[in-house]
Image 1 (cartoon, rainbow over the protein chains, first blue to last red):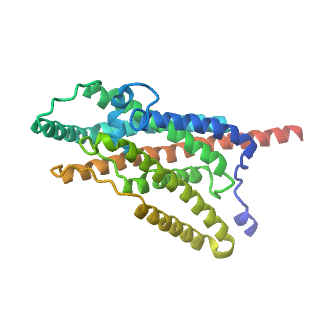
Image 2 (image 1 turned 30 degrees about the horizontal axis):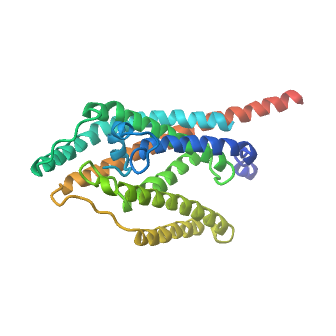
Image 3 (image 1 turned 180 degrees about the vertical axis):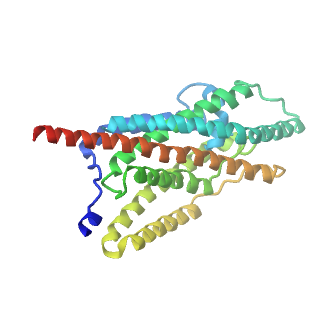
Length: 69
Length: 248
């Protein structure tokens, strides 16, 4: 009886860090870059000349709580 | 495995972004319009010429807002998936659905809720163009601090767990986060650029709408990704079992 009750639920094994690291570094960087374009490009810093990106995502930036003006 | 989790996270993030867009469109946009009306009124009273529209209001409130919400959603979904890939079976003792929900909850608190208490969302007409540099720097400093301190607090709680038990360990971890963030709040400068005649009700509604939009997005990611991740992990586990049977 107790054997059944205490039988651990099989949890998936952790993913080895060696397998995870390249994904975390490159994927993480790309995702952060995407966030930068939505949140801060042409605000405090600017990679592209002008203010089209800023104006285009203007409402999203305000509503998502990124600093804007 | 990591790649397929990442893809699932980003797909769920797109759905979450779509829901957040729908919410923002219905609840948030009327508030943005009210704030812009105030801004125009102020400019007119000051005798300033209206700024030329580079992007039309309907594009900003439509395609622009949709793009913002989708890219933000997909990015957060992807990042949650990467954290999940590390935490599953390592940091978290819960199943995939529980782990995903807890990561999204912790992410919402550390990335959105706590930083927004110090530097809340502002509608148009609030915030000057001259201080955008400083405000953006402070915003990201606080965001980075909040995430780093949250990670450190989770590590602290896990270290205390063996000797003091889970309940006490997580209370200690939470208290450490609140204490250090409280110090950060008092050290970092405050920003208040709300015009004196700006409606307090509109400001409050806008900030709550912003938080609610985030809540829609993060909740969808936490719950949706958990379901997809669990299916993926179970398929892998049963695949392994079948392979083992075949060898036998």
